[in-house]
Image (cartoon, rainbow, N blue to C red):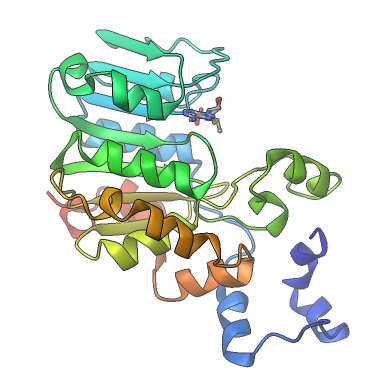
Length: 276
Ligand SMILES: C[S@@+](CC[C@H](N)C(=O)[O-])C[C@H]1O[C@@H](n2cnc3c(N)ncnc32)[C@H](O)[C@@H]1O
């Protein structure tokens, strides 16, 4: 697995024929996929975006130390994590902050988020458990709480090596030791992009090269749409058998542009990218 970082270096590819040659068309997608993401840091992007859009109500799934949560300026914020490790001042100017120490599935079942926030979620950041079926549930549970012009951001959907893509964090820790990406874990949440494109073509999806592992924004939300929850088991069965490889990732992004973070940070008209 560690060698796949090297395999993307064209010099290495010329010198060493792969054991299982990849068909030419497929390998061109991989060659075009970025080896590193050089856009703004994901927290910077979310912080600026929250400010530009005058976000009032914020939801974060997977808060950890509060690095991102603390940076979001808003009136009311709600966060969920089964194991908080807070190191930052998560209140930081907010009027009302609520934290729920539980897994997100229980949170969405038990907590009346709209009531707690006093209205629909304006911006959500989904960064909880890094397995695609968890992110899929976090996505449709969050969409129900949004307005059509709210934004859902998802982290880690643009992995840049296979070592970080393992479904098990302990495998990633072992495999990434001594590599450039030691300890980076994205899991296989990238599959959610492919799922949304297939089962929810009505959504607007914007993928950004935010360092280190991308940010994906989804807008044109439909809180009443049940396509994902209704067919959840079938979708998960189908996508569990999709190979969790950089080749498969690169094929998704072959037809889904990866925009520079500057496209939405530098005073551009947001209605070009998101539902206004
Ligand atoms: C990468 S960290 C989040 C980092 C944070 N969003 C930031 O940018 O500063 C992922 C977090 O997801 C949490 N997590 C794990 N399983 C979860 C679940 N089922 N529901 C919600 N959060 C979960 C972990 O405890 C961990 O703190």
